[in-house]
Every structure is written in C-alpha cells, then in structure tokens.
Amino acid sequence: EDWKKATAMLTNTTYYFKLTKDLDFSNKKFYMFGSKSIPFKGILDGNNKKISSVTLNLEKSSYIGLSGCASSGIIKNINIDKFIVKGDSYVGALTGEQRVDINASATITNSNVSGNTYVGGAYGTARIVSYVVTDNVNVEGTTSIGGIVGEGGYSKYTSNTIMKNSKVTGTSAAKAISGGQYGSSKNYLLLNVKLNDEDASNSTLEMLEDINGLEAAGI
Image (cartoon, rainbow, N blue to C red):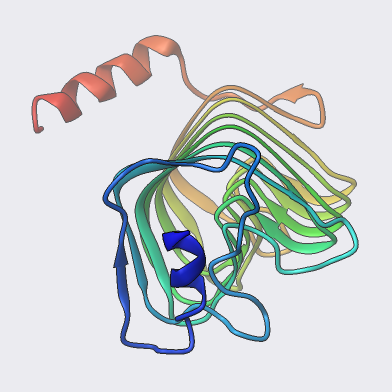
C-alpha cells in the first residue's frame, strides 16, 4: 500500500524515497515507479533492502521495469529478486529507459527479462552505468540485447559489473553486458555466462571469491 502511494507522488521532482524493509509482491499488483508519460525524476534509495516476486507480463507495452522510465531519476542501493519482466521495447528489471549516468549499486538475482528491442537484465537503455551485479538472470529479445544494458549510448559504457550464471539471447546487436550498436563495457567479470549459447565467461569462481574477500576487508 505504501509503494502504491509513493508511485502516485512521482510528479514531484523533489521527493526522496527510501526503503525501510524488504518488499515481497507475491500475489500482489505491482505499480511501476515511473512511466514514459510520467518519468521518475527523484531518488529511490533501496537502503540495501530487497524487492522480490514481481511479475510484469506486458508483452505489447514498452518502457517496462521496476521503473518504466527514469529521466533525471536515480534508483540505487537496491536488491531485486525473482522478477519476471516481459515487454516490447525498453525493457529491464530495474529501468526500461535510464536517461542519466548512474552508479547504481544494484543486485539482480533469479530473474527473467524478455522483449523485442532494447532489452537488458538491468536497463533497457542507459548511458554510463556502474556497480551492477546479476546472478541467474536470463535476458531474451531480438535487437539490442544485453545482460546489463540492452542499448548502450554512443561513447557511453558499463563498468564495474559482475555477471554470474546468466544467459543472453538475441538476434541482432546482442552482447553479454551492454548491447546495441555502441554498447561497450570495461572492468567486468563474467562467470558461467552464455551469449547465444556460447560461453562468454572471462572469470573463475576463485577470482570472484578473491574480490569478495577484498571487499569484506574494506580493501
């Protein structure tokens, strides 16, 4: 109920939203945090809480995700689990269209994202994106498909990302991390990741464990 009230307040650009507990939408209607007609312009701080069990079965609609469209809006520090997201274009578990650069600090797990064009595990389209982790996230579409970003912008990139146990399937301009004509990536680790059924991994479990150990030690 509080989530529904928050989505009704999106026309106010000054609002700062912060999750104070995990939200489970099993057998509940989910309201997107922003749409093409009313894009999200504020800040949603996930506070490292989890939003889970969301189903958006909107195969004939575009701008689909936790937020359909974030113009100047930022969603950060959030965990997403068990999302099933289906749309036409601009489809992502986190945001269908992300118009500003973002250090997301987002983790997406056990989810499936599918559509036609501009389909990504986190973002349908985005500019510069950093600090996204996905595990067991499967992405499928036709054109401009990516494990993190479906369509990366010209001279933009995705960085500091980790993908594990995930699969990306697309017909044209499909890439493991950031898809589209200009999609590019740097500073990434891929473990057990497949692009069109071919192994795209560049890492081992030991490498990821070493990184996790350094992060736990604050290094």
